[in-house]
Length: 108
Image 1: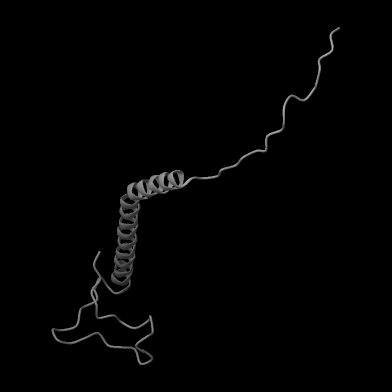
Image 2: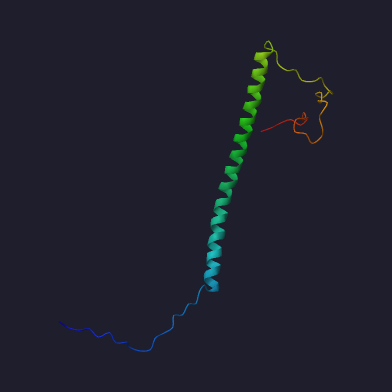
């Protein structure tokens, strides 16, 4: 059986950690900027699609409510006010109340 010598050869070198250089940091920032520029149009498209879906859902609920109104009122549709008139406001209506009628039309 042969013994192996575990002697230390030469002086110990301290571990040198240089960290990130400026070039490496700029490359990383550039890569992140390119990835963000690729992803932003996709995020905007997804946001627009979500807005369209929410609007379609709101319109569906309005039409369902009108259908329920027609079924409960002898197949009569609610009539709009005459030209120049507005819908009547409830007595407890304030400007900030969400229950007030809105004069603005809704578009998708």
